[in-house]
Image 1: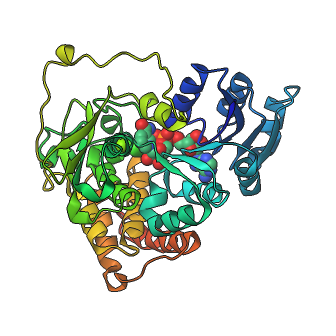
Image 2: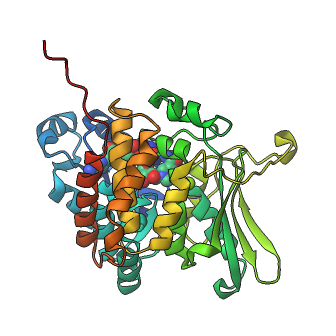
Length: 393
Ligand code: NAD
Ligand code: MG
């Protein structure tokens, strides 16, 4: 049977890797819908290549150019939030949720409400509204398949035992491009330097988060929701080779680890497979060629974002959503030259502190989480460096 796939965030890094997996199995998969933010040309090109039935852009102002780019193809299209929801609601077995940031929450949740299988790359869904997502997935029967490489490895390792026998889980981190840098050099890092990830090629936002280790912090929060573990059952080890992605520690002292070359097509293929694995033409793991694995404890003094994410996870309630919203504001400002790399943890810390009085509040719905996100962004924007004004003569 052909398996129908919809990709949310189709023109991004995960979306393109998903398209590469589909291209290796043209008989097995059919594309129902593709969704992107505002990239008309990228989306139209992909829609032609993958013979999609329907495409949607979130940016409502792009309706006309999108229609023109698809003229004569027979591919239906739409633009704006309702078109995105139409894409989600069209019949498909699996929806790949790969929109970046908090913008992914509403479309991913709409897919979950339909009870679809979800290949979840958008970690922000669980970070900001984990309780609501897990509750609604249980209610609708939607399966959440983790696409993030660490969580995918953990889910595979977990299958070798009973979940109640898990003592702890370890997520590995590459350490990012600044792993060996001192504090002052990290604080002065530029956007171009964050783009030099040692083992993966990814979108701009996650590149910055990988460099600050905020990505690993968000992943701890993601793991807490996916696997139902307490914060003290989750830890991080830096493993610069990025071959071991996650480890499950069992009560008898045994450890099951998930290994793979650092290639997102591998966890994506794992999520798209049904009972049997997909055959993938990817380089096989060659341990002798790699030569050695190294490990080190993460340094939370040089990478305070990891400490801040841990604190938000421990605080629980809405604090992870506040942390994420503040981080998105600070990262955007950094990428557009309005803030330094060192401002990111500062803005996040000051924003979380401003919400300390509301620590017990848990957003019960995705709408509540989005409202909290907006409030966190507003407060975080106030902590950004003051805009430099031209001197008045
Ligand atoms: P990206 O920036 O490369 O791509 C983002 C995609 O989302 C693009 O197609 C963009 O057009 C689309 N988009 C943006 N705003 C949108 C909106 N409002 N509505 C609809 N579509 C919108 O990002 P990425 O690196 O592919 O990451 C996507 C998600 O996957 C993130 O949540 C990230 O944390 C997660 N993730 C990525 C990787 C990776 O290797 N890149 C690994 C693990 C998890
Ligand atoms: Mg990851």
